[in-house]
View 1 (cartoon, rainbow, N blue to C red):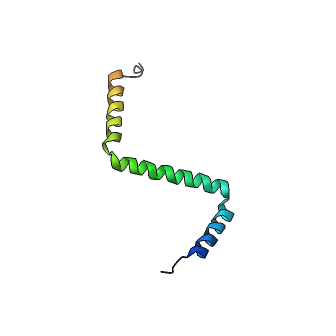
View 2: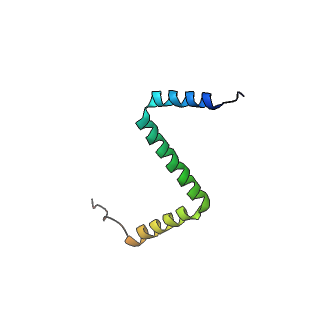
View 3: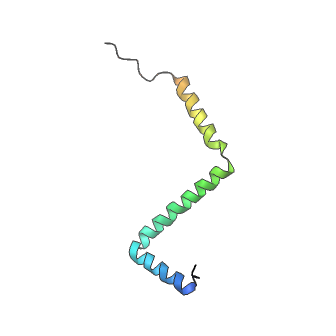
Length: 72
């Protein structure tokens, strides 16, 4: 595998900015950071999502049916 030094990395960065543009690159970085943050959160507390889903399902069941069935 070839070694990537500083000049090669700078060249790759310039090409990426030229292709995608600075604005699109910033949005992509933000989305990537949010994804990593969500992934780390899910690793720290995997039961949090389950607890939220259980609470939501319990609330939906306790509210009863939304509309009465149609009569023919």
